Image 1: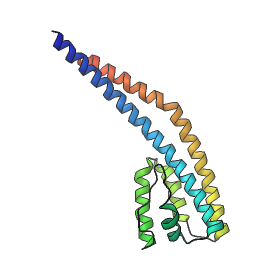
Image 2: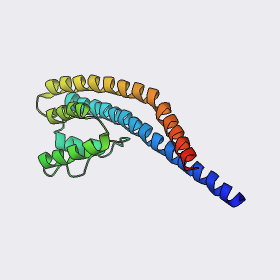
Image 3: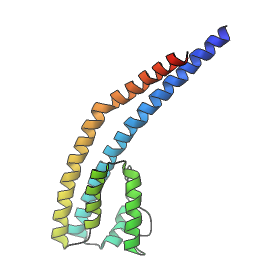
Image 4: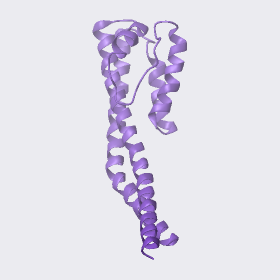
Length: 169
């Protein structure tokens, strides 16, 4: 009798923890999106500095500057100095996997990624500033969404777990 009660309570706690875990993973996805935007903002700052002052070609920039910089979410594959167009496509695929963004946001990042290196230094810096401002706004929106939704997702996960535990008992 006591052993049966113990297993029921333990099972209910496991189901509740699973619900919390599901809610927490949804909250983690929102956090990952915000951190991704922060990484893109940092990348824009580094690229603008390169366009205005360092003036390194993009393959050299990605080999020398970016490989030594540790982003939170964003990472780039090695080998930017070998065949830059192939590397750029591979890097884009990796960026898409890391981002957790919706299609519309990915289109904005894609246009930024494709426009890199298509103009002179001043034109490039101006374009990077434009995307920087766009990414700052996207980060602000992601932070607001994260702040408003994290507790909701976790609470819904716990409540869903409790309902499932009650139904199983």
